[in-house]
Image 1 (tube, rainbow, N blue to C red):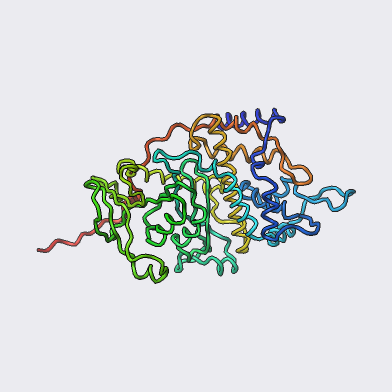
Image 2 (image 1 turned 90 degrees about the horizontal axis):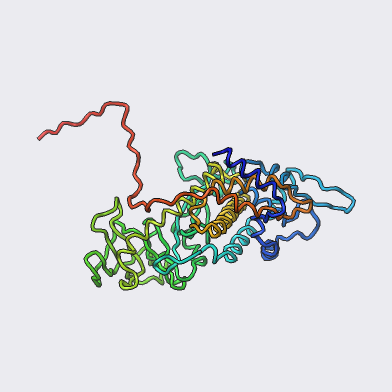
Length: 443
């Protein structure tokens, strides 16, 4: 298999005139706008201008196997001060200084700009319910153990602090696994709080799948009110309190739930009660016995369709696996040693992930398959090898010679997936090495 992959890569290098770089998906005008809006544009001539610093951060997220200096060197990022001078590589100190000058805001702005520009591609096509299917979930990343990162991000485990960690919650399309939005902060900030920061990223005519830990009146009511025809669905919690308002079927109910005094104290605009639809399985699927949703129209959205749609949420777990295990090579500890650089680097990683996924969507369209059937591992390997194989021109512009990559990746289309998992994850039982003693039953 590896030999076949290498042959395909070598064949792709032979036809150098038919390439079109995946990175051309980012318009240079978007970078200029991001720098201008955040007041980070380079006013005077520097060894590493802000425009090239943006590309450096994006490539750091794609070329994880190389140090920052090696990434800069492989891209030939340099600036010619005088016409008579030749281009030379920049020093490590210059790379650190330029990243500190750039900060986080331009990368965040650029990420939002690209998501808006690629919106139709990210959404792909509506689900059979007639809505764009999305998913929200959270994950964590480790930062370098420095005093600055300790103070900014904190530790999840107070008893055993090892690495500072930041928490991220993101909004994904289940059809393409691309990101529509992301919010991250210190590990002391909860996932529900971070999810509220994604309200501006909700697309029209959408159904968002949440894990049960996100169930709160404040988040759910804001989610469906903030977006246009935006809906949500989440598993039923055991501790839920409700009254039946209407019965559509035996396991299909319109319910009314009280809003806790604590939630109303934080948000006085919340009502005392709120309504939603509860649908349940006849036989629970593991720990999940049913779902609560804002889709209360029982004729338009049948109970059978809603009972099966939740398992599409597994696509966001696959996205996190691709990002951490493949793109970051399992190294979830980010490189930067200062908090602003950590956030800046993470935006670059997310931009890089969307770039790979965007190209995979185009490949899937040409191959007439679903975007989730394209191998992420094969795609990122070919992209990485071709980017490193073609050095950038002296002025730091991105080359335009990667068109054949799409034809190569078609050889790595994955087989059709089995049916979505309908049972919750379980912990692997590891038998004890020592004999167990049971307390005798004394009657």
